[in-house]
Image (cartoon, rainbow, N blue to C red; front, side):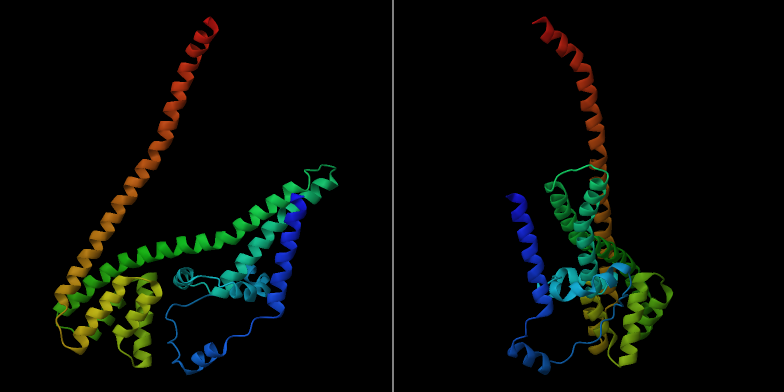
Length: 297
């Protein structure tokens, strides 16, 4: 009975996904009118790379997954940070889920050819578990990679702030300080800042506007705060050299605090194997004595 229920549920979900793909829902009239009257958003600063065999195989499943509301807002920002298009991510999720669903079935067929059988429930449950794991795994990888890139960006941003306020102290203007400082640095973070400043120069917009946009795309509030401070200096002539130095010091303090927290967490994780070894040693010593006592009774 349970096998029939699982097979029926899987067949129903497959038919529903096929129906959504063949007959997509029409957007509401209000949404269409709002989309046609709103000002188009500026082009994203972060570049995306559409590659991978999994993305090519899973393209037919992009529309059904988008109809389900995937991915969420937070995951969309993470994908923008790591430079992975949403369509590619959804295609990879679908491909890995289908591969995980079919892998136990193929293994069961190979065992059946060898006259070995594990029953019907084992490949079904194993396929469902592997499908769920394959569907969630790209999300976990995207979040982990985005968190690492944001951490590295904050480290680079603190150095960039130091360079900017030193250049301002030397008598340079705001635009010159931003462009000259970013030309010194190397790495992914400085490349993104350089791309934002080049976008501002090519589109004839202010550099703090593109820096604010980059901060929103990266979900790095420190960069948005930098853009706000620089905008005050560019529009109202405010002296922001002291505030930039304070922001750089605050960023370094946060980084030291995070590093200390990670070191303490690593120390606690290292103590767990030692405790397990100690408990095993106690059990090894106490077992013979406990056995002798029990046998004497």
